[in-house]
Length: 137
Image 1: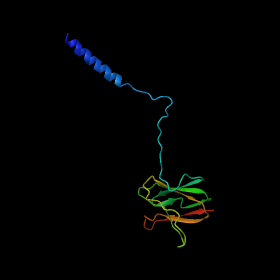
Image 2 (image 1 turned 90 degrees about the vertical axis):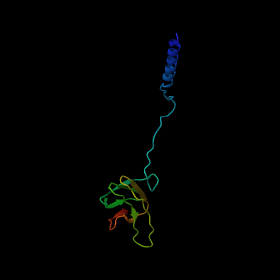
Image 3 (image 1 turned 90 degrees about the horizontal axis):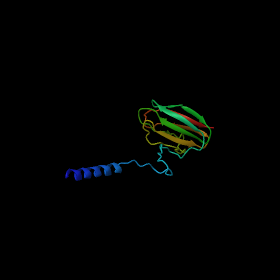
Image 4 (image 1 turned 135 degrees about the vertical axis):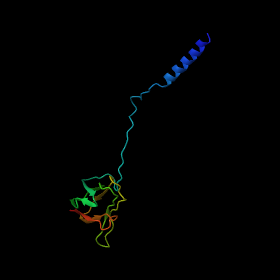
């Protein structure tokens, strides 16, 4: 007879463990969790057209870009090394308009051009790096 109470005790413990391992489903009115991907950018969300420039093998593709005011240019580093994007003012009186942080492969930088003009830019991290041009008409 002493085996029965021990068996009953073990059976009750097992049933309690099984009951505690049940799967609970969320209520129907609770929204499912979502994730948000954030991409580093120098500006807020663009409000006009977007043109893309790839950085490949220490050069920019396309090298010359003609756009209209309000266009956002997005530079994406598709090279294996880090690069920066920097406006290269032609006159000492011209102010620096944009400068990115060092962009790792796959990272992007964007700038929205609002005024007509010719804007040279380049990668100051690359000694003798190529310069490119954005023409805003």
